[in-house]
Structures are given as C-alpha cells and as structure tokens.
Image (cartoon, rainbow, N blue to C red; front, side, top):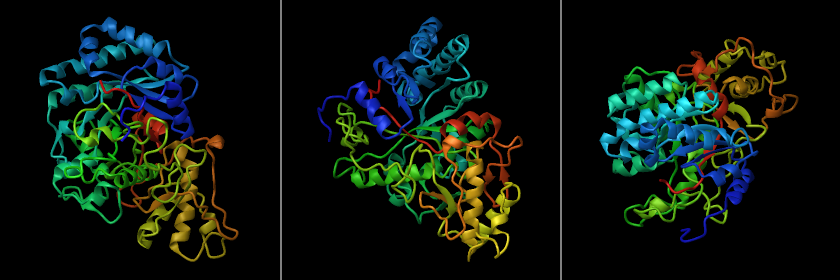
Length: 469
C-alpha cells in the first residue's frame, strides 16, 4: 500500500487529471489551492461542504453566503465549479437529531447562489449512502427509512432543478449479503441476471440495481423526475486476507474498467433507460490515514507518485478498454449475443420513430444490407447514435447495442463518425432518445434532466483525494 508517501501537490493532481483526460472531479472540501490549480483547465468541479460545516451554515446564513462568495464567486468562472455537495453521508454519519440541519444549510447556500446569479450554473445537492433506504432488493420495494427528512431534501432538489447524489458500493453490498449474490454480479461480469418479480426488470449488475432502488424509493414519496448521480462507487484493491478476500487488485481493476464500459453505453438502469448513468469513481489516491480495516485505505486508482495501482484504460472497446471524454466515443453496433428478433425491433424503431436515414440497408442492392440482421442493425444503430448522441440519444436499444472503437465499415459500406468538434445541430423537434423497456416503446428525456444528460452523459468521473472531513 501507499503508506506514508508524501501527498501530491495541487499542480501534480491537475497534471494527472489532464493526462488521463478526466474532465470532472469531486472534492470533499474547499481546498482553495487545488481549486486555483484547476483554474482555466475546463475541468468541471463538484466542491464539498464538510459535515462539520453543515450545522454552521444552517444556523448562520451570512456564513453560508460568505463561503459561496469566497469559494464559488471569487474563483469562477476561471475554475469551473458546477455543483456543491453539502456534507457526505450526513444523514448516516451524524446523530439522528442533527439531520434537521441538512436542508436549511442547502437552502442558505442556494440563496447565496441566487443572489450571485449563479444558481442555474451551480447546483446544490447532498450525497447520501444507500443505507438511508430499506428493502433495496428487489429494487421495486425500496423505501427511504427517514421519510420526513428525505421528503424535504427531495422537495429542495425538485424546486432547484438539481439531482440526487448517492454513494453506491456493490463491494459492500456483496460482502454484507454473505454470498447471496455472486461476485460476477457485483463486478459487471457477463452471464448474471437477476429479475425483479414485481416489475420483470432484469438486472445484469448490482450497481444498476442500487440506482434503480434509489429511483423507486423516490417514486414511493412521489418524486419521479429527479435524476440520480452516483457520487461515489469503486472497489478496494487490498484488504485483510481472511475477512476481505475479495478486496484484490484483480477485482478492483475489473470493477472500475467494467463500470466505465457500462457508463459509456449511454443508458440508465432498467426503470430509467432514458437517463444516462453518471458516476464518480472513488477515489483518485489512497487515504493512508483512514482508520478501520485495510480496505478503507485501499480504494485509490493511483499511488501518490502518479503511478497507477492497476490499468484504467480510457479507450472504448471491449471491457477494460474504454475511452472517456475523447473526441469520438466510438461506433454503436449490435451486441454479438443479441437475438435477431430484438435487433429487428431496434432497426424498426431507429428507421421509424428514431427518424434515421436507413436507405443504405433497404434492400440487398444497397451497400450496407450485409448478410445478416446484425449487419443491418449495426448500421441503423450507429446512424441514429452519431446523429442524436448530442441531443440525448443513447447506444442501448433495449440492451441489444454497445459501443466499440473498432470501425465496423466493410467494402463500400462506410459507418458514420461524428467528432465532438463537429457536432451537428439537434432537430427542432427531437425524436425520442431511444427505445426503452420493450423494443419500439419510445422514451424521452424529461426537460428537467437536460442539464444532467448534456453535462454527464458517457463520462466517468474520478474523485480527488482529500481528508474526508
């Protein structure tokens, strides 16, 4: 482990972020030196208010206003601060009687942003653990355990057009389940599907299940249009040999690389396919002074000298080789295991409601007709995705499509590539974002999700190391 090594300077942290093309970070507290180092980089920053500061800001609006002035107003726009995370797991880390301070603190910070005319650019949220829910499996039975507090929090998020932040850890769920769930299910590995008998939704991995549990818990309180951002997730790369046997480099590498691949397919969990999955990987560096078991000090993706603990490959393609925020996200093609019936349904949707030009696959005389439904589906899926990915479109097609960096063009059939730098204008009447649930059932991204979809879609975020509190 990275024991007693010197902490990297702010300049080295920023250099490492830039080297890996990481354009979003979350800081646990307002480290002014690091925030200044992020100036003019374009990196989007979520800056944290510590748990100790929450009560202070709730009781003293002037102090919250001063914090906003010194941290957000004075450093913007050079430092691209886009959100404030109020506390971290405040509702479970602090005594229950302290929970009443959370929403008032958020309100005071938001009012200061409104006064500074920054409330549209900088959103306020509060990361919570999945432990604020009960009955998370099956996801459809999930409910919040502190209903009154969560109702006030969700009302604030709805009123301010913000998002719910959840720290979701399949590692901990797997360990706590005592072997009920297979390790492959926690690591995004293929071949594992668990069905929610109440909804018939199928879950191929545990993170999708936890995110959907959050959506169902919000829906139980009648909040159905607040997007979820995963403010922490990850896997420890070392642990005690006897009690933490699954905390290994191999598993950490598999989890985070497969997570990146999952995020980049552009779709949400089964109940919210139209809302892209948005994730912060915990964490950039190991926290050597963290108390507790070995695993608590072993979540970092990098050692403090900048060398990787294990390969995190930011290029699209097969799992473990995923490009993040590059100029071209990849081609959208049919999954190898997808059935012809599902692929044909995707073609019908793309060439119909999706308003895709499918003239190149209309008959065997056309250059991209190919020798199989899979060939034609790949062409139709990619034409739709390249045209609509800037407008909320995704590469999912009810689970029959995925991204690849391998150009599928063949013969005289050329697959479209549209770089970020040449993004086309969105249609004035945007077609649906893609079929969700049943093939052919159109779904639209709600207007309230627009900021999240355009800011976070197809990006994986990495957190910067700081002291937690």
